[in-house]
Image 1: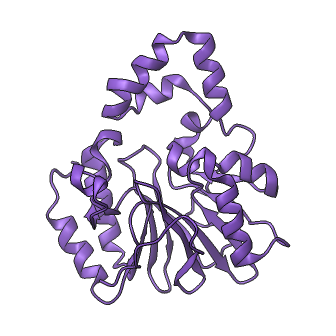
Image 2 (image 1 turned 60 degrees about the vertical axis):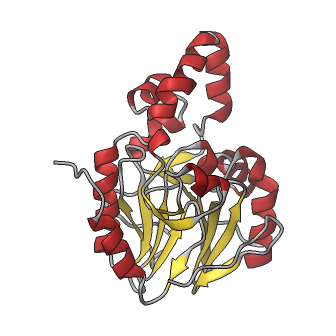
Length: 271
């Protein structure tokens, strides 16, 4: 499976498939943002960390210029490394942020929802810290990160308004409303964290930037069994391109077979 060469934050976006541009990988966790063009329209897929606004804007200008706004910012899931700049960019561009409706409570700063859908790192570190700082300070922090006012749910029929060539499929597990974005005609799949190409479940994988297919990070995943089934669902799409949330995109004639083999080796499966 061919992979993009190593890149830095200052490198321009790379067209990894027709009309699909990768902004990244960026930082230690090799986080990616994608610009998707569909005829005269375009959308941003995921929005990096809160400090990435200017970097993303510069990348967008290099691809689409500054004359047109996106039809939407599409968010695979509401974690701070994927939705961090969404509110600032949506306000600048005057566009909605679209997420699965199961992500709406967390996106709106609902602390009870954060506790209900917590992963191991949340349970061990984040939630205890948030409780320790007191309700008033906690609510201030959650309000600051809330996407309330700019978020809307994705259409339940799997379509994306303004992007007729694209759709979305549910890939829950990492979060309850995680989705992947798919272009059926050539089977390009933007997978978010449902399937990544950086070995995030190995300490050496992150520290050394080791590339390779990986299930979502265990330490931030809500339901590991559902996450395994979502990898299988991605394999069933027979992808020709895996544009992951972390790690270099992979493409080529061996991609679908590699994803199938990886999915087959995962356990347990949800029942």
